[in-house]
Length: 358
Image (cartoon, rainbow, N blue to C red; front, side, top):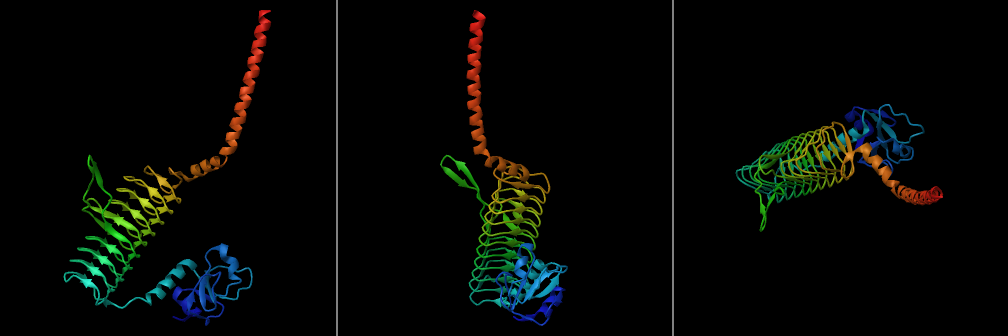
């Protein structure tokens, strides 16, 4: 796909600063791009690459002023990062498969697949399930019985959507994601563990994205719910009966235990762990590897460490921890000094008693 800098600017409602006719055929990083490549500058830490890049055009902030000569054509936009995302979406959509059901797919006669949807080879769609308009279902996806998949979704290879799962509009499910596996529910007995049947379902609202090999477990009863606009990274575990509220983002390898509610606009760094039956307030941020053992009521707070504590307190504790060897030596030296002083006092006390006896 080839396009000119002016065509890109027109699509993004931007302004060209340089050659409007320069031809572009690819996108790449600013540090190692080549001629014909479009890149972007959003982070000031990368500004020095702007003056040496071989890229033909660069998306920059509308009011950006370079401090040296720039060889590349600049395309001034409101938000370079967001503009690149919109452009990449168009490029990607241009390579999407055609509508229709592959001859190698297995679709139950009672299932309803919209004529504008695309169903790839070796897909299975179970009884009474529905797939919405313009949704793309890639090869080897499993969609169980009584499922509802909305419009304009993208479901990549080997995704599993178990029975009665509901997926809203414009959702993206990456390869290997599992929606609706049994929750981890067992009751201890004298002989071992009795499995607790997981009879609920999973609900994804609109505009949710689930990363590769992430698992969203079905509820014991009712539903595990991922609210509108939530973004979940690869290898994340959301246990049964959880609710993740609107626009929360969860990074890779994080885990949320059963019956926990995560507030709106929360941010979970990589490998965050949250215990079960808890609630977090809105707009809470959790640093990587934070372990949360109690509910959080303070909106907009930041937490870090294990067990999780407010960020400032955690940083102060970390600073003290770095000084522990020095403090340990100081305590040892002080103990020796105290011992010496006590011995001196004992000697003085004995001398005083002898004098008093005379």
